[in-house]
Image (cartoon, rainbow, N blue to C red; front, side, top):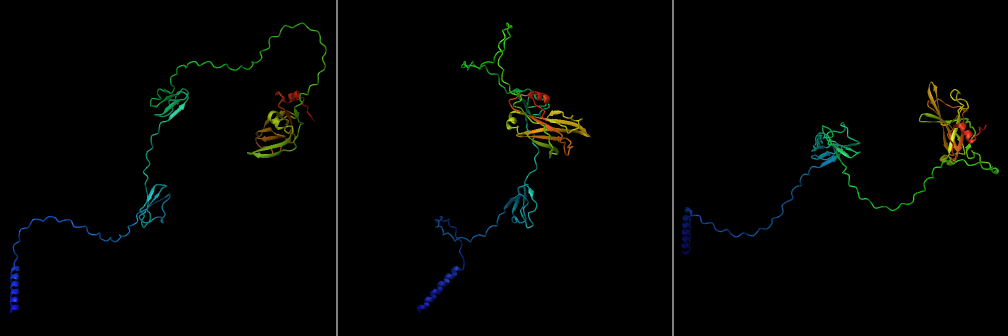
Length: 351
């Protein structure tokens, strides 16, 4: 009985609750905001995210002194030709394409600069251009800048003459000078009375031969001549041994070569005519030809040489004769020709 009563009591409570929930009541007014609560503690760090994928490679700028090869670089790269300033790129699947110039157009020529001319004396009105200068080196006058009316007045680079300096102290007495030259001989005095004849003196020793130190050869007749060609000219020559020609003679003495050019027609060179080398003979052989004879002297040897201006000869005559006079340094010989030299030095014509 008691259990049934409790059941009825529970059902009554449920009925009351159900009746109260069947209809909402009116909303009450909003209450005021409560104060902000204290900040909570920081949360733990979360786990690291996954790595991103690799980025795309950037472009590369290559360089060289010629156009780029097709094998150089990859798509997107650039290439600079340093020899002409052309830049190629970006490279594509079809290649490098046409380069474009990094150099601008050539600028206009600049205005010529001014010049400083120089010379001796006043500048000529035609010298230089407008704006130029001119230095007169003889008196250090500077003209310019030149204008349309000329050079104008000059400016002197020389300062005014300075004042005369004080007189210096007297210097020490100099050394005694060398003895002067002997004075001229005085006038001849009056002739004195004739003295008595003195005793005859002893005969002096015989003097040395005047040509004691001079050497000379016989007349030498070369039988043959050699030849060579120098710069297109044929040189005929014959070497004659002359032992008397030493280095000392070449250094300080004299070697004179005389010739009888008897191989020529007497109308060109008279037979046995003697002359000193060098000798130049000009005659007409269709065209004027000049034969030049010379003597080239070296220690122990004299080379007789002939050059024809027209190269006329394949060989030359063996009738020409030569002789040599060797004069040491201590013998003074006047210029008196062959005949006079023979008499002066007592040279004989040996057979």
